[in-house]
Image (cartoon, rainbow, N blue to C red; front, side, top):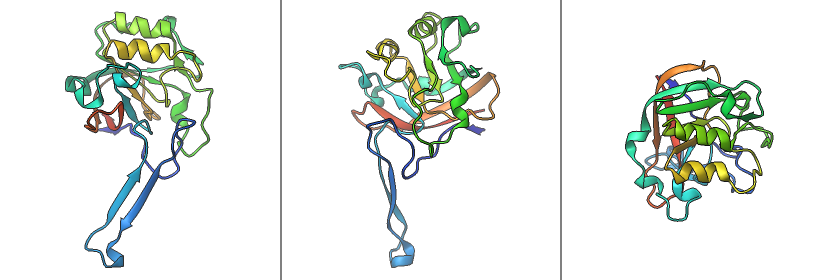
Length: 202
């Protein structure tokens, strides 16, 4: 098993404008409590997470309404190197691939560093090609699947409008291109537009 999840921790890097993350021990055995108990304060789009259609589609499905068959299967990992944007021309044959995960240079960065607006994103042309090829799950190691300040969020709207599962914030450092099996388990948060997730390859 290869864990490709970014750990959740206090003051980790988040999307600009989002509230920061706080992981706090609120009760401790050493302080006369019978158990250790912690509390997490965070948005649902932190670290490794899943976007539900509701994130950009007003009447879209929430995270608890997603097809759970999308949470496991085979995936093609594609290394995009140092490219600035992922285009249709860069994509190998992905027909009949259920899922595609994009490994960019961002996997070498930790979420302790300042947010980098120059991360690699997916072009609308590439997103449409993946849909036409029958891909149902698209993952990337950046905190967003499309470029920073892309305008109208057309990539998100195009994919989520087709109920494509979007996984963002993966950590694919040390993972080679190729075919794998994957497991992606977001929390079942009723009515939520997204959720942190644990994602693994094997």
